[in-house]
Picture (spheres, rainbow, N blue to C red):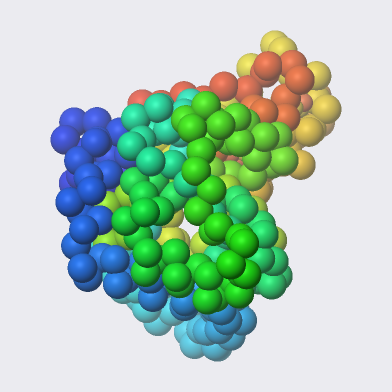
Length: 281
Ligand code: SF4
Ligand code: SF4
C-alpha cells in the first residue's frame, strides 16, 4: 500500500476511506481558499510557467535537481497529490460518493486554452455550498451566465464516463486538496495534463496505482495495441515469443492497456504482492 494508505487509509486503500471525503474537511476555510486559488493559479498560465521552471531546472546538476524535486514533492504531498486508480476502484469511489460533479479541466485550459474540456470530476463538492469555487471557475474560464461549471452526475453516469475515457486511453487519477481530503478525479494524458508533464521531467505529483499489469502470454497475439496505449512506456514486445510483456518497474497500474486488448490478455495484480514492484510507488 502507498504512503497515503498507511497514513489515511485506516486499514483500507486511502481512497476507500469515507472520512477522507468528509464535508467537515471541505468546510475548513483554509482548504476552501486553497481550492479557489488552485483554480485561478492552474487554469491561467501554469502550463507555460511550469515548462519554464523545468527547463531552468535542467540546467543545474542532476543531484541538486533531484534534491529540489524531492523537497517540493513532499510539499505537494501535503497540499495536492494524486494516485493512479484503475476503473474498478474508481467505480467503487463513485458508488460511495455523496456528490459528483463534472468540471472543466484546469490543466487543459492552461495547456490548450480549451474551456469546455470536461475531463475532471469533483467529489463531495456540492455546487450549492461552494459558491466561491464556482465563482473561480466562472471567472477563469470566462463562462457566460448560461453555463454552469458544475454538471451534476449520478454514480452510474460517472462510471459510464470513466469507461468512455478509458477507451480514449486516458489514465484515471484521484487527488487531494490539502491532504487527506479527496476532492477530484482527473482523466489524464501526457499531452495536456500538468501532472503528466511533470512526470516527464521525473517530478512526481502522484503515486503509482495499487496494481501492476501482467500479460497472459497464452492469450496474447502480439498485436501491440497495448504498447501504443501505455503512457508510461511500460510495455515491450518480444520478437522471439511474439507476445507483449509488461516491465513492472515502469508500470503504474492504470489498466489502460487492458482496455485496449481485444484478447483479454492483460490483467492487474496486487502491487504489494509483486516481487519486483512492491516497493515502487
Ligand atoms: S493488446 Fe493484448 S493481444 Fe495485443 S499485444 Fe497487447 S496483450 Fe497481446
Ligand atoms: S502497462 Fe498497462 S497498467 Fe501499466 S502503466 Fe502501462 S497501460 Fe498502465
